[in-house]
Image (cartoon, rainbow, N blue to C red; front, side, top):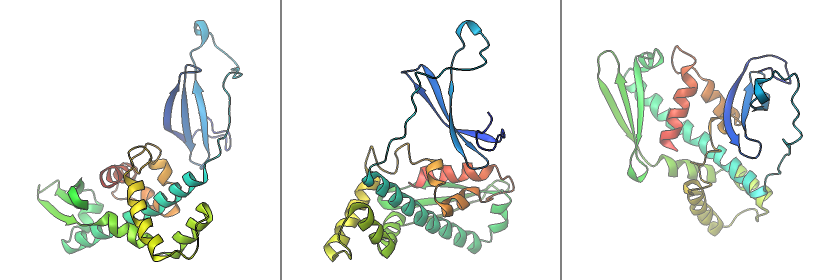
Length: 235
């Protein structure tokens, strides 16, 4: 598929959705140049070759996001950024302690993460050659991340900007915000596990984008998969 902006074919499909109203697949694509565009897949009538498609019935519109949604998106990106920094810091310290840094970089040592109850996370490293297993447990990563974010004045300034809340916040506001933050993350429909908070959403943040593109093994194609598998387990 040719990118409308750079006219090159270096793009990938990031999302696909069937649209019943027009009986077609809507494909969202992202080009290497950074441009995101949408295509539609139709069945040609009687297998005819069509030079030009008529999209009179396919309406295009941009829906303005609610201010509260914009605020929540910003807050979730901030959370993900701090969470990953803490996660990778723990991993780096353990690899250094066990002298596994080079093996991990070479892909000999593989990481598996499992969630435990009460905010505990089990990090398991498996040496694919010797079959030796290394483990350590992370604690309260979620709460530590939230509390670090709430210490930053930028958080409260943005909260005032988006929600028109008083600034500076009172102590009661700070305590209430911590509870509200936790609830918003765990909400079944709009929380951090919602489909919209996928790999492309996280790429919007420059720091997270660097994490995603980082080479965690000699095969650069592994980085995106590694990051996403990690995110699915710890979010």
